[in-house]
Amino acid sequence: MPSYVVTGASRGIGLEFVRQLSSIPGNEVFGLVRNKSTATRLTALDRPNVHVLQADVTDKKALSDAAAEVGRVTGGKLDVLISNAALIPTGRAVRGVRSYLPDHADELISDVKDALNVNLIGVLLTTNAFLPLLLQGSVKKVIAISTGLADLDSTLEVEISSTAPYSISKAALNMAIAKYAVDYKKDGIAFLSLAPGVVDTSEGKGVMQGSPEEIQENMVLAVRFQKKYPHWLGPSTPEEAVSQMRKVIDDLTLEKSGDFLSQYGNKQWL
Ligand SMILES: NC(=O)c1ccc[n+]([C@@H]2O[C@H](COP(=O)([O-])OP(=O)(O)OC[C@H]3O[C@@H](n4cnc5c(N)ncnc54)[C@H](OP(=O)(O)O)[C@@H]3O)[C@@H](O)[C@H]2O)c1
Image (cartoon, rainbow, N blue to C red):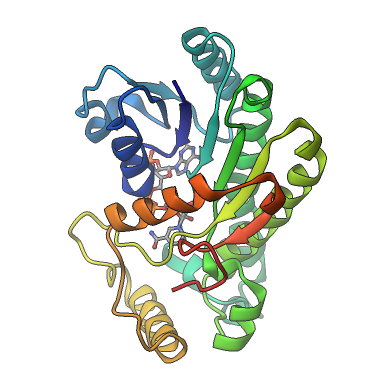
């Protein structure tokens, strides 16, 4: 009976992970959400093998309580942790560093701290809370959902300056995952930073939404992506992205632990 914890399960990619994983008989899936009362799409799944737990990933006590509840249901173990929750860039955080400077340098620091707090510290707190259960599990995998925007080579090659705070936080996350991978290899736990590609999680609103500045940044990005990846036809659906990522997760071995891969299981980000 493999058990899974998925953070940020209220919507988007996290919700789709819970939906797909819980459709497999025998799987026990725990969806962690910030607010249970507003996670209506998750609770509407209404499946006996789906457990909805409340925890903000920046709240150590809430994560510890969630881990205790998971352990109570599973008999003290967890097979796979999927850290998916993230602070997604909106508003001014879609900018590159240069557009904050010189007059809004404090805003840059504030936005980087906010992004790091959820996308790095939140994953560290979540990993730490569930490690005792993972050590007792059979599958022993920890997946951190990252982004191709955190890849150094493509940032330089495609010249992506936008979403600086988010990209910086996810690049730091990739290194954190590599550090855990090195330390926990002898315990048999495989870690992976996994990018989903560009996924339309707008729930029908379309990816080109937001302020004029956000739309402009997204359009610049889309044009650059298309230049580097001419085959790219636009965002995938959560269903497609999660199916692709599940294959990469299933294929993960200890030998590849600590790597940073795309939904294709390699370094092709789109
Ligand atoms: N969509 C894409 O194109 C894309 C591309 C690259 C990478 N990714 C990555 O894929 C993952 C999922 O993205 P998405 O597009 O599905 O995002 P999304 O639809 O905006 O959902 C984000 C999820 O994270 C939760 N969350 C945010 N802050 C949290 C916190 N402090 N504690 C607990 N939960 C928190 C949200 O909960 P609430 O409902 O309470 O707000 C929501 O469930 C993220 O790691 C993202 O960086 C996405």
